[in-house]
Length: 187
Ligand SMILES: [Zn+2]
Ligand SMILES: [Zn+2]
Image 1 (spheres, helix red, strand yellow):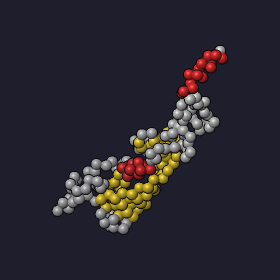
Image 2 (spheres, helix red, strand yellow):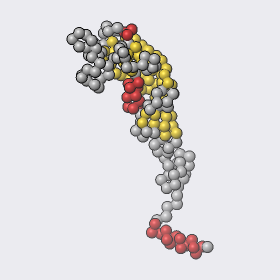
Image 3 (cartoon, protein in one colour):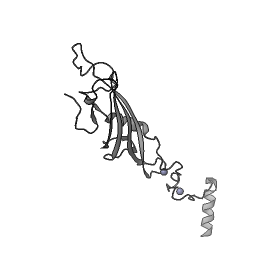
Image 4 (cartoon, protein in one colour):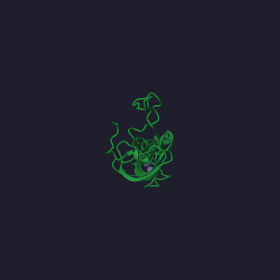
């Protein structure tokens, strides 16, 4: 029994490929984004469309998955905190190894070999972690609404993109008390 759910849209069946190195299958499909696809202020909105264009290739050690995922990334500008969203294409590549077998050719489910490398599970593979890794690599550390976003006024928080002329009258702190006195005299 596989631990993967074959009805999940991101679980792919590689049985058709057979285990003949060189056979290849192309897949194009659209899925709804799973939750938690991102970090902090920036993420793929859950339920938004992800267009997957993948290629499954049978190689000596397993099945090589490569391709692209076209998706939407949304979040907040790191300078002015306004909402932002953009479409981007991320590259996917992962080798899913055939599971280790014992001397009688039976699959060893929890083999002690390299845990890092994902394994085929009853000929199924899960694309979700591959997309997750690709998205994390593609997320900008400091997303910007526009490359030259002017950010917020450090004194009052005004959005400087909307008010490029915005400025405060600078008063030298040494003169501040004098200015106050002058104001009092004016009254
Ligand atoms: Zn901005
Ligand atoms: Zn200001």
